[in-house]
Amino acid sequence: MAQPVGAPRDMSVWESIESFLSEPETWSGPGSIWVRLGEHLWVSIVAVVVAALLVMPVAVWFGHTRRGSEVATAVVNIGRALPSFGILAISFLILVRMGAGIREPWAVLVALIALAAPPMFTNTVAGIQTVEPATVESARGMGLTEREVLTGVELPLAVPVIMEGVRIALVQVIATATLGALVAWGGLGRFIVDGFAQQDQGQLVAGAVLVGLLAVVAELGFSKLQRSATPRGLRTAR
Amino acid sequence: MRRAFRSRAVGAILAVALVVTACGSGDGAVDGEPIKVGSFAFNESVIVAEIYAQGLETNGYEVERSLNLGNREVVKPALESGEIDVVPEYIGTLAGFLGAEQSADPAATWEAAKTAFEEVGVTLLQYSPAQDKNAYVVTAETAAEYGLSTVSDLQPVAGELVFGGPPECPERDLCLLGLQEVYGLEFAEFVSLDAAGPITIAALEGGEIDVALLFTTQGIIAANGWVSLEDDLGLNPAENLVPAIRSEVVDAYGDDLVTLLDSYSEALTTEDLTELNRRADLDQEDPALLAEEWLTDNGFIE
Image 1 (cartoon, rainbow over the protein chains, first blue to last red):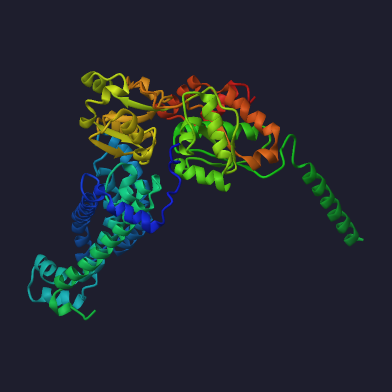
Image 2 (image 1 turned 30 degrees about the horizontal axis):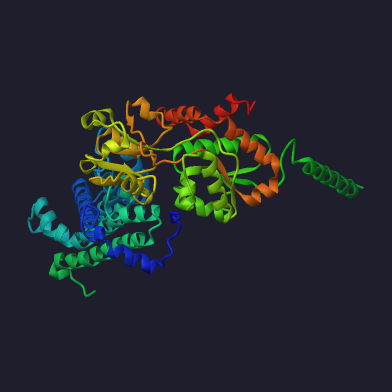
């Protein structure tokens, strides 16, 4: 009779991976690696950009006026404690009730923005506040307006720390965007969730490895970006 | 003098403690390892598992619950390895899963599934008259637009439609795989959702999928005016509910346990399941409370 379904296939993990990589659907069509990679990267970048737009202005103000460092610390601590999965589930239920599409990434975006915001907020505040007060004072002494002090002195000097915050946010978001697959979205998490449900180890491992690779590439790529954005006078040998 | 009094007092307390613990198994409590009750990750499975669990507890058994574990790919190994002892199963899908003969005849399907499962140390008790099969559901609008009343009616239009179901659906005989092989259906797209749960229901409601995999006992189908397409080529076998239980647990506890679980199976009907599901899916009532109510209404709990 029919082969028992769902029994762990008599394949080693390697064979399963090979099998997955040799399937045509893996490389073309709506469920291909390229499509999922694109979705994943796109949503991750949007989440970081939106989170930045939301928190940077406030953070810059806090930094420049040298206030609220306790708030900054509290924000990052609370932020770390927020359960992304919990936020995702609640957002999903609310958004569906409001008529949002099931397969749209709105719920994932909410959870990822909540994840990306705290490190960027805190690093921006800290970055500006740790600029040497003497430097800022002498800039004022030279007759620069507050705005010029901020944009000409404080921000450029704070760039390394601020970009560090963005990098942390981006890598965390890339890793966490896999959760979207649990609420009918796509992304690389789709391979992990479906691979697990179908006991298809090849698919599962491929998905996990791809997410890891994407995170590492983002980390390294962004480090390069950080270095080139740092004012030359501040660059230290790494 | 005081020391002698204290040691006698301690002795008396110890003696009382010993006597109390000896009787402590209490009135009607059953000795032995706790029975681990598991379930799949959809409401009906949780409700029936709770019926087993609460029924056993009322009769003095100690019970541990592992509910909402996942699909059969997760639950079957857990049962085989002893991480769970009993789970409510469906004879047809189970037979197919084990590579055994499945048909519309409950007795034959049950026998085939039982024989196959016993090879790995799990047996099946008496099956219930209650059945729950896979349902292929469209909205009333879709049915009207394409003139659908049976699954075969999908043949000319499947290429324009989106099918939504649980992630394991493409691999399952009673889901996409079977629909392809028996009905020749090739859908435009498959969307991976959940096991006939809130995500699938919302996707069908929102028009993001055209055909949903649901279960025949989900009262929400009728409540929403949806159409469950008739399985005219008989893809689905008999799907009577049955307790799948580790043979060693049956041997350890004997007839009393079997009689108890059989009594619940006997009392459960398809109408019961439909009503319970409707209240869980639509009214969002708690499965454990629904189980308690069912047990009380059927005289198993005072």
